[in-house]
Image (cartoon, rainbow, N blue to C red; front, side, top):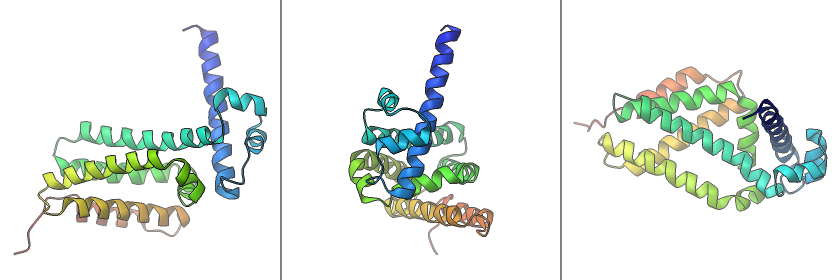
Length: 199
């Protein structure tokens, strides 16, 4: 690849990042339905025509934003499986640790992304993609809890997912007051272990 092409690709990626950040902020504050392509272009500092060089329309832009979140989740899970040598409890622990670390690293991004999940128009537009990701994560959780010997792996997978979502949402809403580290350790101690039947 030539230097010129590399520079062009870098500028393109930078422009797309600006567009996606502007769109996320507008979708979060004004609502997806109340946000136009013109408003996004203006907030990103580019022309409306150039917007269409990157995205076919508002829905395609929304899907690109969500896909980045999905891809990040996928890479965390893949990395956890590759790095874990101690079995399924280590994979679960890695997923919990990395989820917390990612939200702490970029809370504003996750706050904006979370706000999209509460908008009906957004969820209708991306329902198939969200369902695929949801089933993938539940399936992985079920398999890990099955390996750990739990008699009800589906319920534990759903409970861990709900706990992670809830904890991280509370942290996003009040990062200065939330006891993140102790709660994370409690989650790890509760879920990331083999099933021990009560005697």
